[in-house]
Length: 109
View 1 (tube, rainbow, N blue to C red):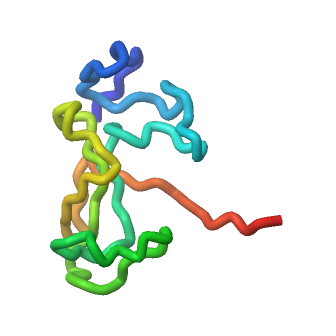
View 2 (view 1 turned 60 degrees about the vertical axis):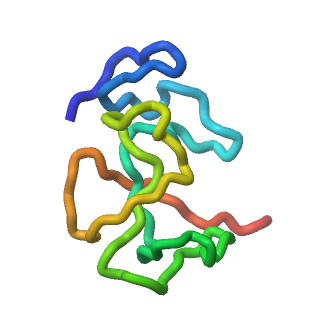
């Protein structure tokens, strides 16, 4: 997989992944939320997203032979890069434009 050493201008198409700290974090402290690689989720595929729990828990009903990918990757057109974008694939599919984000639940102090 190609890695760009220099990010393009804002809104520019890079055609490669970029180092994680190439841009500032979003308000939740997450970097590169849009466009580096598709992100695997634990969610089972459902044609409609209407009954998604909406609280951050995984949707474990539906077609679990397919899992949800979100966001799009560096080789997608810039106007398609949205965290709400959903696609599906079998969980054992390995493609260089698929990745994941490690997440954990933080408990209040």
